[in-house]
Amino acid sequence: MTTATPFTAGAGNAAGVNALPTPPSGWPIGSYATYEEAQRAVDHLADNDFPVADVTIVGIEPMIVERVTGRLTWGRVLGAGAASGAWLGLFVGLLLGLFSTGGALAPIVVGLVAGTVFGLASAAARYGATRGRRDFASVTQLVAGRYDVLSQPRNAERGKEMLTSLAWRS
Image: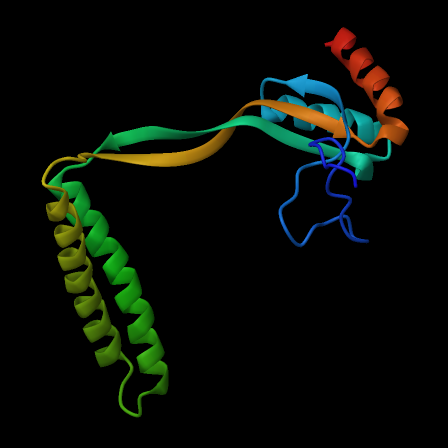
């Protein structure tokens, strides 16, 4: 019986994609601080006829980063709620207008007004429920502390040499 390690598990199916999450396979041939650098390394390998189907980029030490984009106020919250509600109402009104036997304008106006009111109310309820504990907007990303480039053992030495030469040119 063999034990799977991070560098030997997950052979995958014929398409190279696993149905279930499995650890990556291969030997490390390069390590980079950013995804952009790892992508550049793989692009270098591809440009030099390396079999990139044997390559995997692995994010190591994942972390969740929340970047604050601005302060929330009642005005911003209600404005955004009204705008999103208006778009939804306009869409529903247009659909109803397409299938109504009467004029198309009335369903569009009703949908727009109802959507705006619903958007305002739902945004106010959500923001009011926080009671001032979250007065900022943010975007959350999953990033890694570093990015390792792995290659299958049959080409690992060649890939490592190619990435070393890339590092010397940079």
